[in-house]
Length: 427
Image (cartoon, rainbow, N blue to C red; front, side):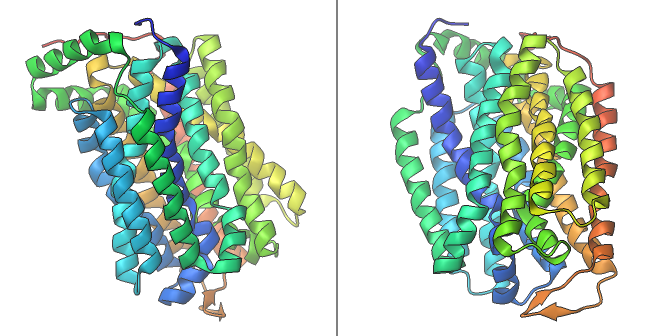
């Protein structure tokens, strides 16, 4: 790895991660405004799930093309373009006058979101050595989880005092501040990486556009790691992003503030767990074993969420916090992919996996909403659908079932021992 300033490397990657922070706020803010959206657009759980999943639909469509683009064009310029689009779409969401305009804004936010993690990962792979990659990516994910945390209780307070539309407009102002920081601090690669960058571009040109795509698609490691990461991510999407607040209010009868606090614990757990588990994986020199162990613990925690009766707020917060810590093992999937592919195909390969990762949200958030409505008796209160314990139990069964599938994927993945398995692209 070229010799360059570690301080500058952290400034570049952390600044780029502000885009991920902002995007994750937009993705997870539904927990704080779900009731207001139901009232404003007169929708039930199914349509709320579709609106929430609009973000993931766009991600699924654009993640793979974005991965290909990031391997070939300026990461800095793409980050600036993506964050600008996200800010404009957030303003559009705040000003939407009907459900379909809100869905369009949500889709555009998701389009921009297809850039945020891949771009930060691309920069991390250029500015840091492979043996530190899991820890650095863990820190990147921590930045995103901080955004998710801010989108819970703090945003709930803001929505309560100024309304959801003004809250989203205030959110957009924060995005502008982040944009200014990124313009001033983010660079594509360290000075001595120029030769390696040109070498990677020559390899890609020699291989050709379609063959580079085929090479990324044909690597089973990308699919297995992507599946694991996708399915371990689902508690964040479902509990932290969309339906957790409704669940805690309607089934456990917590206040709105208590419910948002419980939901936010999954982000706090991930904030702590991501760098810790990433660093642990780096120090142990293995990827698959910690993925499997954390998967089993996550399985027991999701079962506990379903069967836990009459918990106190503290007990539920503790359970969700633990869930956040252990499901954060999903971040190990990213260095596993980076190490299983040539450097020139890093973003393309992570793009393949990311389609699966965000595809989980695109599929399972609407499915969760549909399952909620499956036995719903159509009761409402102040325009908000009221669901029973049975309704939520049926929907929450998604979590342990999918985590079992994720564990199987981790068992099938090939261990890399934290080393690149292929430095060059073969023609």
